[in-house]
Structures are given as C-alpha cells and as structure tokens.
Length: 228
Image (cartoon, rainbow, N blue to C red; front, side):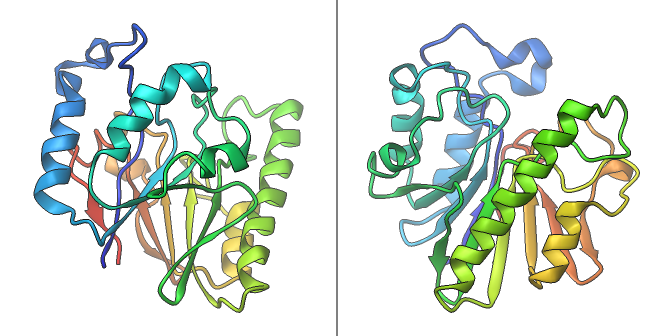
C-alpha cells in the first residue's frame, strides 16, 4: 500500500496539443508514463497527481483522458492544475470513478495520513507578481487551510499535501503556503507545474522538517516516485 506521485500529464487524446513540440523528451510521453506505471504500481497503491491532467476545456472532452488514467492500476488522488479548465463540480468529479478522487476543500485518507491540498498559485516576491495574483494567492491559502481543517475535524494529525504550484518561488523564500504547512506540521509536500527547470531552483528534499518533491513527469523522466 505504497504512495507514489507523478504530475503534469498534459494528456490530449481528444485535442490537438502534442507535447513533443516542447522537445524530443516528450515524444509519446503518455506511453512512457503508462509503461513505467504498469511496471511499478500495484492495485493496492495510491498515486498522487497534482494537476495539469488534461488539455481539454470541457469535462466531456476530458473523459477519454480520465478514462486512460482510470484504466491504470491503483487509487488516484488529484488536485487541479492551472491548465485543467475541464475541472467542474467537485461532487460530479468524485462520482465519476471509484478509484479516482479529487481534492477541493476536502481530503482523503491513506492509513493514518490525510491527503490534503489545493492548486496553489505563484507567490509574492516572484517576478511579475501582480495585485490580481495576490487575490488568487490569498484565496488558495484559504483553500489549503480548509482542506487541512477538514482532516483535523476527522481526527487526523499526519498530513501529506498536494499543490500544483510550488509553495515558493525560485528564490525559495518563505510564503503563506509554507507558513500553513509548518502550522499543521505537514510531513510531505508534492507539487508539479515546473518544466525544464534546473535542480538549483527546485524546492526539494528536507527543508525545515518538511519533505518536498517536484513530481512533473518530465522532471521524473516519466517514472512515478515513491513518497511513502
């Protein structure tokens, strides 16, 4: 019953969005994900997928992409990415498949751990941060706290958090997200969003008692990483 993570699939089975325009590494990337997944992951495992799941704009257009994930082994838990425009009613999403769960102000459990999260946003102090960004940033802080509080109310004290955006910028400075993570003694944080990024700019490893993982599929060479 291990926990794995991998994100930023950018699937496009019903849309014209080939990922290999971003480099040869992305050529047939969905086949790489599937082959590695089938080699590593069992039905009893849980896979955390922090966003940018499908390029589709509407839920009906995304169904082939979601079905593709559904047909892979394991229990899958998602948070929304900045490109997941198809993401609609959370209750509708959570009724699609028994093995696929979507987080939005809620949480799911894995043994003694609660899996919490939100999309996140770019953080103050980064380049081009605007007043409009600040409004979204503050809203995402509220959503992260709501997700964690939903777990606290059910008696959980051990937390793994999923974010799509990193909880800091490339200077790795403190942020409201990190403040909340510390407040709730979160053990592990997984995030995606970043592509073609150097390791020097990645928030990774144990920092201040929290273990951080960047799980963008290209960063992981399309191989799910074991989290727990």
